[in-house]
Image 1 (cartoon, rainbow, N blue to C red):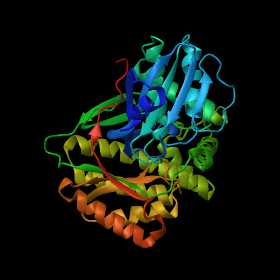
Image 2 (tube, rainbow, N blue to C red; image 1 turned 60 degrees about the vertical axis):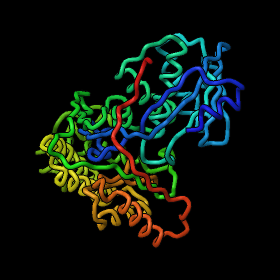
Image 3 (cartoon, rainbow, N blue to C red; image 1 turned 180 degrees about the horizontal axis):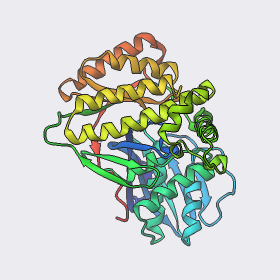
Image 4 (cartoon, helix red, strand yellow; image 1 turned 30 degrees about the vertical axis):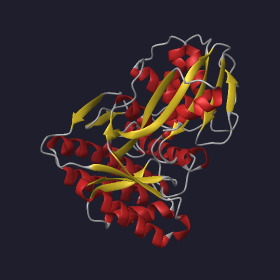
Length: 392
């Protein structure tokens, strides 16, 4: 971690505070949080660090070790429209915080992500870490769900990414060795402890070498396709429906999907199939976790990855290659794309005794197909972690 050192080099003094927000993985529940489905999630012991101090002139001054351009903006006068750089996520966060609380104090900060960008919800992590820092210097105490919804709104309203609440919920609510099981319709959740009889596991993350931005992917289009499927199914069944933008596949009874799903255009039918099968996998996975059945849980994760490829139709060729390599590698219980699958990375639950061997074999197989990505591809062994600590 270099952000403290760079802060000192930049400002000639040590930062007064540090903030940290972990990245997350979601083994099950992929692509259905925005349709009010159910998800499984774990925070990991890598994430976003911010070294910062208050600036009493009300200016936010940010330097990132992952991007070259420094950002600066007044905390009491956020531009109405995004600028188009990496700091838009933080402008959106400051706008959300300022709409609810009076902001007078800015911060000088150096931000550092510990892993490459793409697939681990780095955007949500940097927003949450920044929110906790800006709230602290302004004497604001944020609650868990307040933080989750504020961070989500920053991406939805300011950045223009129609994400659900999966990322933010995992990064705030998760606890080490406990699986977050969240219903995105009513926000009810439980933390399911890792049972004593469950096999040990490491979390391996395999970065394709390609970074991605959801703003430039088909992420928002996929959501519209899901809504179109839901709207059509409700209409076929003669059920009431409201505004298109407020319609979700969770509104559709499973029996209606079973009866009318074949009427849908192929793309809409595939998106609906992914939702309903992934919803079931998230439920079945939570039960397998409770029982300590990691083999079943891993099988479900692999099935989730295949549905993301075949039904949700996300994943670039590189990530699809990684997925198939993982399926053929001994020592991996289960794996899939991490995040939306438009470039980024894959995650896997791995036998700890074989983790280093797994990382070596996956890298060798992947770079044999994509030798031009040598030096950009990264494999990393991680572990579960607590979510962000607020109000410290």
